[in-house]
Amino acid sequence: MDSAAVTTLGRAARPTPDPSRGGRGAVILLLLALAACGKVGKLTPVAPQTAPPKPVAMSVQPVPEDMLRLPPQSQPNRVDDPVEKSQERPDDPFNLPPTSRN
Image (tube, rainbow, N blue to C red):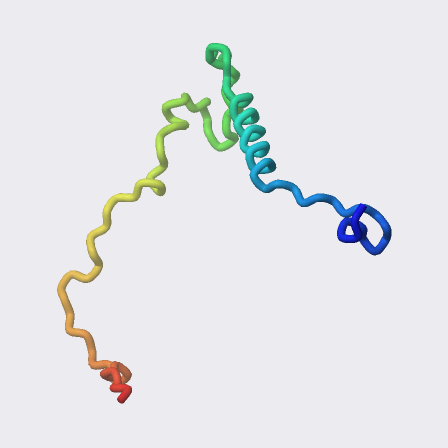
């Protein structure tokens, strides 16, 4: 054992790992994990489930088409521009031209 390999506590120093080996192993593990995520069998439809309970405020149970219809708040009608005609902007006393930095 040479003196460069011995630390102050008398233990042998660990060799530095080869950076190319660790990266290759990580890529292989990542590819194996990715390959394990795939579905092998055929997809099957989910069995029909019971409808959600009737809302308290409604008198009848809503059908799926009613539940999928968007409320008016989500698709509001277009409102025309509130400015009906162009107006001249009032003079702004703070709108000063830029100063030159010479």
